[in-house]
Image (tube, rainbow, N blue to C red; front, side):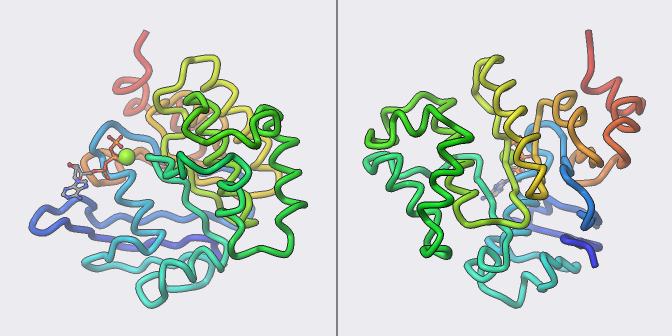
Length: 234
Ligand SMILES: Nc1ncnc2c1ncn2[C@@H]1O[C@H](COP(=O)(O)OP(=O)(O)OP(=O)(O)O)[C@@H](O)[C@H]1O
Ligand SMILES: [Mg+2]
């Protein structure tokens, strides 16, 4: 069974159709699957549908064995699908550690263990553990958002443009972290940094105007005409 199975998905906002007959899968043995595409392609809409935040107009959406339209969004987290949103949604006036605690509400008994694992992955968060999240830099906030996602012990971690608005060096660091995380957790990576994302993905999908344009292994997509012409100039 696949970790994620989407078949014939259509999603609207009111009268506006944003996803069109979209099918994709995340397999059991995938480490990183990426969904790349330009602004407004529908990437975030897709993740929100997988998380049960948006209800599709039609189509089948199965995440970790459950039909997402028939269970609550919180049950999807319980089953092991965690979505780190574009906005990061940190609690700015709570400490770093308190933010991590918010991420562990489904896994309270292993809070300390998971927190220490996150601190090991992101030592800067340990240095700042008592500081309010709002005082962190953009890169540190992204690390905290990812760390908080890991606190729920996900089987699949979905990241919505984790490198967005980060200086190149910090973006590099985030991509290295994703590689590290993907040793244990399957990562669904949504990105506009097409080359970086495809470089570390087993498989990828190019989403344009709400439709899958091309799919294949990371390498196949990097070498495809659609990606090379549209996204890899220079
Ligand atoms: N709440 C909403 N109501 C109406 N239209 C929306 C809403 N959210 C997104 N859209 C529209 O749906 C389309 C897809 O948006 P979406 O945010 O999924 O794209 P995206 O690929 O994540 O883009 P970005 O790279 O900018 O984050 C866009 O045309 C957008 O304007
Ligand atoms: Mg988006």
